[in-house]
Length: 109
Image (tube, rainbow, N blue to C red; front, side, top):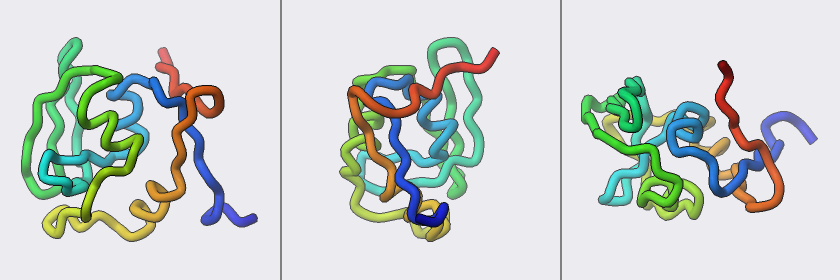
């Protein structure tokens, strides 16, 4: 099994900021998957800037809409302006979330 075919497993209830830092993808409410250029943390909230220039203010919630959409892969299509690379979309499609198995993406201090 080569590295391109490798499946990735993460815990279901990981913090949203840690998950976004790892995946660098943001699901918008319209069902479009954006590529993240920068995440600026400000306490319990963060400001996300996408590659297409949109900014979002988000809170660190494990049960948020964005966290659920990332875990359940409820996105319709990638953003044309962000130009998310094909390898990143394939890596995202081979990512699985489990409640009992996988990386917890803990903070490094």
